[in-house]
Every structure is written in C-alpha cells, then in structure tokens.
Length: 244
Ligand SMILES: Nc1ncnc2c1ncn2[C@@H]1O[C@H](COP(=O)(O)OP(=O)(O)O)[C@@H](O)[C@H]1O
Ligand SMILES: [Mg+2]
Image (cartoon, rainbow, N blue to C red; front, side):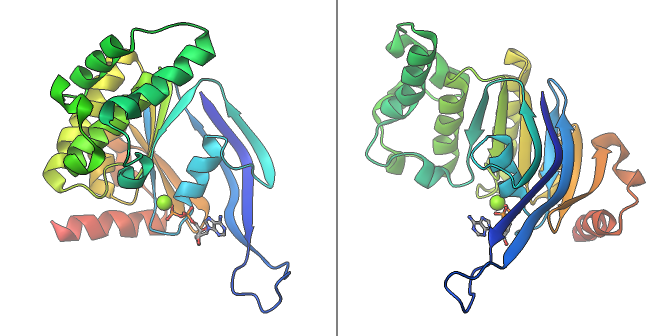
C-alpha cells in the first residue's frame, strides 16, 4: 500500500548567523518502510524524532531530498491539532461537506449531502443535532469524531493519524480508538498511526516502527514487543512498564 525506500529529508538550520546560511539539519535518515494492506501500523518516537515529517512525506505534502515514495491508494489525514484543523467559522455540516464536495469533483457525481452527513455522523456516534454546531460548541472528543467523519467522507483506502488522539483524556482516547477499530473493519481500511504514546500503540496497532533521531531503529509486531533488540526501543518499553 505504501512504500518508502531510502528516504532522506533535511531542513535548513534555523538560528544561523548568516541569513543565507546553507547548513542543513538531517531530519529523516535513510528511511525505508512499508505498510501492508489493511494493517494498522504505528510510528512511535519521542517529540522531535521526525514522525510528523515522515507523515508529511507519506501523504505527499513534503517531497524528500532523496529516496522513493510509493503510495498506491487514496489517503486521508487526521491531524494532531483538531482545534485548528477545523475552521472555527464552519458548522459541523460545513466541515464534513468540504470532503463531500471534494469527492463530488473527483468522481464527477452529485451526492445527497444531507443524507451522507447523517450517515457519517451516525458512523462516528454523533446524533444529527450536531450538524449545526460550531467547533467551540463541541468537546475535544466530539470534535475529533467530526474530523474522523470528514476523513472518512473522502472514501480513502488509507488514513494517516498524526497524534490525533494525544491531546484527549485517557478515557476518550480509548473510546476513539474503539471507534477507529470499528471503522477500519467496516471499510477494510489501512491505518498509519503516529504517536509518542506506547500504550495506545499496543492497544491499537498490529505492528510498530520505532523512530529515533530520524532513523527507524526497530520494526516489530505488537505481539512480539518482548523481542525487541534495539537499546532505544527497549528503553521506551521499560519506561512504560516502570510507570505501571
Ligand atoms: N518545516 C520545517 N523547517 C525546519 N525544521 C523543521 C520543519 N519541520 C520540522 N522540522 C524539524 O524537524 C525535526 C522533526 O520534527 P517532526 O517531524 O515534527 O517531529 P515529531 O513529529 O516526531 O515531533 C524537529 O527538530 C523540527 O524542529
Ligand atoms: Mg509531530
């Protein structure tokens, strides 16, 4: 479904004395990975490790300096900061309509938007009355459900989540992950789930990549987390075990 081969990304270093300084900071180093059809792949790493950069490369929002990116199917994105990713002046109905309009153009069709919105709201567990609300009239979990409805409305085969649930409380996180599991099953979707939180990866994903300083240091099936060899991955795993 998705394949990256030897991808490298660098950015011009900030805080350079010369305005036109050419020093570059390597953000992703020789990243090769793949995502299998219908799997949920976790990308785990601490803040600044390059996860969002990798997500942007996967979605085609950022062109890497080198390497090859292949994505076979349409992809939707659910971002980290759902409060800014939804236009505050739009109602829920308008937010979801944006995706429906994209689909109408893409497929040269006319949709019964009212009906589609009703179905999508039901899918994400919101009643119809939510369709006229504005983002500030919703809880974090409800707004994230709207963002999920908007992503699903595009009828993608792949959805990439970048820290999509990280700012929700633990209970709401589990509710949203359960909802996402259901949606994945219903539509046979493939997920890429970017997070810094190991416990959500173990709850939600089939397989995980450990990203450390722009490099994939370990790849592992969730059922085989006990077998990781990389020191950094081990440290991460131990830190979570110790917290319990
Ligand atoms: N557009 C950009 N220009 C310069 N540096 C960037 C840019 N985007 C990200 N970075 C840097 O790349 C590194 C990795 O960032 P990011 O991919 O957002 O990490 P993560 O999502 O794992 O926290 C950080 O040091 C960040 O400052
Ligand atoms: Mg990030």
